[in-house]
Image (tube, rainbow, N blue to C red):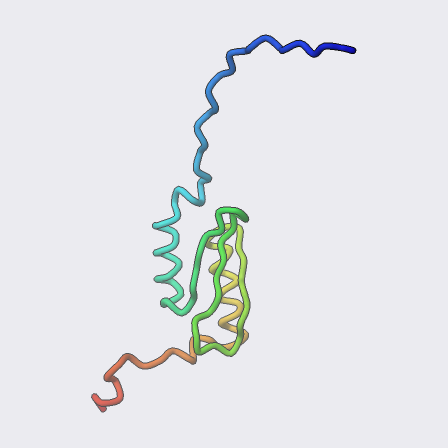
Length: 102
């Protein structure tokens, strides 16, 4: 019967620090900018696993689905295409109290 020998211990370097992807580093600023440009009509987030930007329209909406973009500008282009096709901008609700002001 063969006897297994233990391998000599080796000093390994400490693991390198994990770096944050560029998109995640700019997350708060980019997210705030996207929300402002869409008028708050879309729920927008960055997928840390997919490393892509995602959006879906808020209710009331004539279309329901997810939109994906590699970058914030790419996502905004796709959001605008959907708004153009489905007319999401027409469904903007009047501010609270606007009807009473008439």
